[in-house]
Image 1: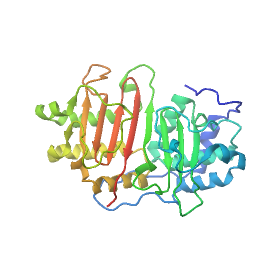
Image 2: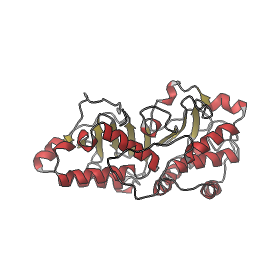
Image 3: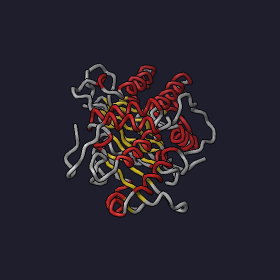
Image 4: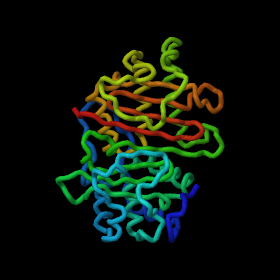
Length: 329
């Protein structure tokens, strides 16, 4: 559903806009990455998305900077919501030029894998009317090599960040959000239902005793994704208590969850996870609350550890909150 009016606007042809973005972009994060216990590098200031961020910043007029450029320490940088705009102008407004819209399109594409971009592009179109209905903000100055910066895109069911790995101990630059409203509350119609099918494979592998520990009645608040560190208490069953075959399913699940994003970010995720204890540091929880079809394929689930939170609320439609960070190895 399109966002509310943000003032006088000139709408762009969304199909032409998408074609222009695709023609100007190089797909990032090719498939086939492995979840290996090794040292990974995160993104940099010269990664594809961050290069486009700098280009976008350089294109801004003084008046534009007054509206969408904020100090790095501004509290809005770390706020998360499934539906909000950090700044008022949306990309479809005449506040932005066609060239600037194309730059933002390249940033979004650069933050995704090829498959992930197609899925996120579809979600933006179906939930909001396309990328022109989203807003952007720049925290800090990407041209200042001595200080951190962050580009953030927000709107309905999507928050994406590009920080060139300048935000310390934060995969993806900080918490991110994705979602999808399939209309009727039928879980299988949601474009992210494949993730629930994958977590369900883990649940189906559990013994009766393990399942009793993993299945809980009521889920925590969807946006409650603060990192707890080593002394935290995590819901569900510890992966450390699973068999080798079950752990392999958990590892496959992480690959599925991370697949929509660029290799540089997912590599940083695995680096952070390794440093905090690897797979064995995680817990998995499934919630009886919100079982849409009454089929016991649990539509709300959570993967959490000292440096990792992935909360997926699939009922009545998807809101997913991700926060991954901590000391790197």
